[in-house]
Length: 90
Image 1 (spheres, helix red, strand yellow):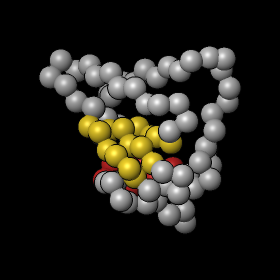
Image 2 (cartoon, helix red, strand yellow):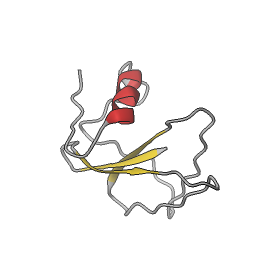
Image 3 (cartoon, helix red, strand yellow):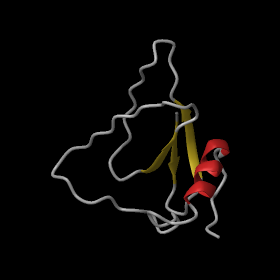
């Protein structure tokens, strides 16, 4: 997997490859930081947790809506996105 962090305009700030020979990596993303994860291999698994109480997720204004037909395009873009890149909604 790769973890990408973004600024408020949707520009990639950082890309971290989450790989380890034993297959387990832990990473902490600060609260309020726009981020996304993208699986690079089949059968990738992720466990995400955050401090409660639970509140519905917030989505950045530049991100496609959940369930959007743009999901496949965004996933493909995330696989190759590098710092400085910015996704443009179609």
